Length: 354
Image 1 (cartoon, rainbow, N blue to C red):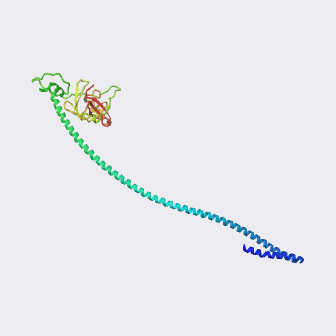
Image 2 (cartoon, helix red, strand yellow):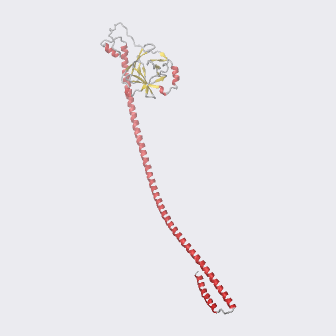
């Protein structure tokens, strides 16, 4: 660009000098004028070309300057964005470091919590095993004590029952009170209402020996159509009797009175001394069969008899439901047949018929 301007400056004085010479020698011949015009035209064309080149060069310089300014602005913008990106990168790096630190701390806390939870579980398991061992030991000791107490109570009750049975059998041989015992006391011993005094037996009168209870045989009870065996709430442990009772029934078929003794543990004692244990009662239809002895408790009358349908009962018992098994429980006013599985319901028989 500087070179073009220098060349242009060199040409301009020559052009001005030639214009002056041309005006001073206008009278020169045509050949000289033509040569001068040719030289001037060449110089002018060169000057025009130089001016055009200078204009183009200035245009290029202006474009280059504009491009340079634009690039500078873009560079400044890119520099600002790069600075912002670097700041964001540093902030992200710092945040990542903080998150990693928190994650490391969280992992440590989690490991600590897991260790503490495992320690608590182990302590709870040990405590549970200790408590269970204590409970088992206490339960075994209590069960052993209850068994010993039950054995002692059963032995005492059996001894009392045997003594009472022996006394009753002895009293049953007497037609009147022995010498020295009033009729009222004799009635109480016989568990009867006071009777009218009778004369003492003569020496020649023979003593009557006790006769065993004659239980007739018979089939199952058939209730009337639509009738059901009434049930009631089962007694609680506090309802159980601690005394002996008489269970009296009259067989509606024969009119014979049946009298049994009911002990506190649920055992029925027949007049001949036989014992019907509280366990082993099975509900068969509406009746109850005492499985070990084969006696049947008539649900309609509350009387006992030998069961003639034993073969059919044996076949039925093989598939009998678990709810058929019962236990006899004695309370103050009668006996309950309580289910072994459904312990909340029972069938009740009062000691005396209404």
